[in-house]
Every structure is written in C-alpha cells, then in structure tokens.
Image (cartoon, rainbow, N blue to C red):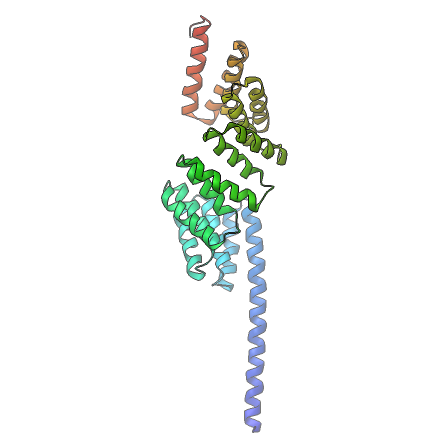
Length: 291
C-alpha cells in the first residue's frame, strides 16, 4: 500500500466513524423527541406532541412507529382522514406492522364503515395472533352487527391472552347477555367487577342482566354502583328509576327519573330526554296525577 493510498484509507475510515457517530446521535435524539411527544400526547397536548414527533420523524424518516404515533395524535384530534394517511404510510414502511392495520380499523369504525373496519382488524390479528387488541375490536364489531356468538368467540380470545383484563370480561358479559346466556353473563361480569370494582360499565351490564331476570333489588344495587362511579350518566339513574318502579316504590322511581332527566338535559341527550319524560308521564298517569 502506497503512502497516498494509506492516507486515503485513513480519511475514509475517519469519515465512516464520524458518519456512524452522527447516526447514533441522530437516533438517540429521535428517540428522545419520540418519547417526549408521546408524553405530551398522553397529557392531551396534541399540537406540542405533533411538533416533537415531526422532529423525531425528520431524524428517523423510515420509523413506522413514529409515523403511526403521529397518526394517533391526528386521531385524538378528530382528524380521521389525516390519521388514516399516516397509518397507511406506516404500512408502506412496514407491511407487517399490525398496529397500523388495527388503527386503520379504528378510523373506519369511527367513520361508520364497519365492514372495512372488520377487514383491517382481521388483518391485524392475522399478523399478530398474540395481540389482544384486534380480537377485542373484532368482538365489538360483531356486537354492533348483533352477531353475539362471533363476538363471544373473540372476547374469549382476548381473555386467553390477557386474563386480568376487566374490560374484556365486561364486553364478554354484555355479549352473553345479548345472546340470552344470563348465567354466563352474570358470572363473567362478577369477574370483571372483582378485577376492577371501579368499572361502571361492568356494574351497569350486570344490572341489566339481573333486571332481565327480574331480580330488581339486586339490579338496583349494581345500577347504583354504576351511578356512583359515573354520576353524570343519565342512563344509570333511568335504570335505577325503573328498578324502583318494578319494586312498587313509585315515589323513589319518580325521584330517580327526574334526576335522570336533569342529567340528560345537561348532556343534551335528546333520545334519553324523550324516553325519560315518557316514563315519568306513564307513572304519573298510573298514579292519577296527570302531567
């Protein structure tokens, strides 16, 4: 090797070392921006999160996870079209990235395109059979389609993967309830409450099961628990009123229904307002009180 060749070799080696150090530094900075952006997203500071995540992407342009998380920010901001664009770009970077398929399913579900949502959830589950989120979303789509048998199958898959997931038990209990399997519904909803006593929907769903079985006193307890945990939900107070009515306690029924009506009016829930007013009117008519 001539002296000239040796000097060229040393220069090339030096440049390679500098380039490698730059890449390492850029990767670390991108990771830092990414983590900071996720923290801001969790705090609901979406514009600030976008700024940092875009900085991370400039340093690591092929990182599908950063692209997906930018999509998540747009999703939380309610910009479904831009979220969809980012999720699709993430898939272009990595065609096997199941999270992006799952999130595309969320976008289509929110748009009301349930069949498309189901397609993407199923693709996500095929790519990641050990991930529970796609099965949960598939189950919810089948609930929406009133195919409760298929919903049950998917919620059972969720529980097999994450046996301590109270939401999965609550969803499964609801599917059993709608499928007229009341004993199983009660069992799994009790499990959901055991796992998380602060899950209002599990209490509410169990109240529905017990009310259907005409166990009004037991149902009343669980509706009251749901209302305690989520005090602005008019539906809980409406059901409390119905249970008092079933127990022949009309005065308590009317008080609960009036409270439900005030909650519904505050929320602007026109459907519940009409339902509650009609029930109050019916009870008063039975009591001979007129309007």
